[in-house]
Figure 1 (cartoon, rainbow, N blue to C red):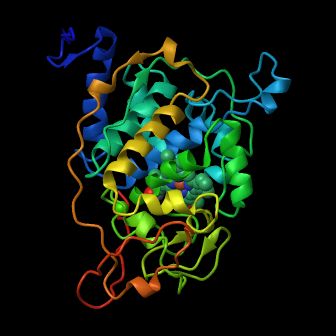
Figure 2 (cartoon, rainbow, N blue to C red; figure 1 turned 120 degrees about the vertical axis):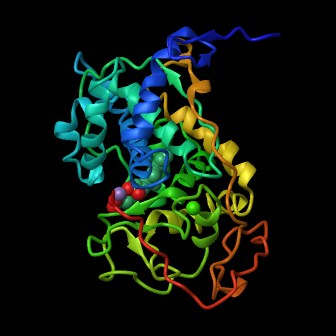
Length: 345
Ligand code: HEM
Ligand SMILES: [Ca+2]
Ligand SMILES: [Mn+2]
């Protein structure tokens, strides 16, 4: 079958005329939020924001739902519309920066905050070599109320609590692990305030499987001012490690899924894309939305090969999965190095 396409007033083509409004938003985002199409700090923070908005949904709390939408609306842009109080929730520390950067762009266009948050995340991810081209569905109404506090997982939570929180929004343990591929393009500003911009893997500008590889290395040092809540020892200078990531990589319920992404770019892409597609419409019904995925740019292929960081060997891998061996990888040549911070912009 031949798909009918429409040509927008701005010249681009898309499957649905309703998606035409997104092209000017796309240009504005790339130019003014992502510094001309980079995979840097604002992309990382925009991706984090998609999660902190979407996870604000609780069927349990919604038992008490009244006209105020007490269980939260999921991916509804409430982090923007109700940034007071949501930016004051402890788990949301630092998201005010990207909200402040996104708000004026939203104001320039005819788009709801809920659609914008997920659109900016999908566009941002497309700037990172190796990323899948994420789905984007249009049609989130403006939020009616703030999310309840306490729905965003924290790095000091137990895996039992993390899996229970995600189960509440219908995510399985393998889907949780797939979502954590996001931490391959990530850095922390507030886990250790003495070392802002410290990445979770050695390649925070590339959507590769290094996060899954490096998380399995033995932790040997704290990169900054020592142990902070939710932080555990890192394998290398310049990398910061979250307790939840380290534990997901080692827990019986999740370690084999974690390991399955090591040097398997295609599996990681497919499963991250599927989990993100689900996350982006928490609180909504797919049937009521318009598929505008063809507006999202096609990401470039991954840069580099799966490897151990220089100075490491397979002896530094803490095998956790009981049913399959960690894939054999070779180390980059040369002496051990320190990973540079993600520059603020
Ligand atoms: C167990 C679940 C999770 C926990 C406990 C967690 C925790 C954290 C923490 C503590 C930070 C550092 C924030 C800072 O100090 O600046 C962070 C960063 C980040 N998270 Fe997560 N996260 C989780 C799941 C996710 C998910 C599902 C996504 C997206 C799909 C995500 C995307 C990101 C990104 C992209 C960053 C980097 C932000 C930046 O570089 O500025 N996280 N996460
Ligand atoms: Ca990476
Ligand atoms: Mn940041």
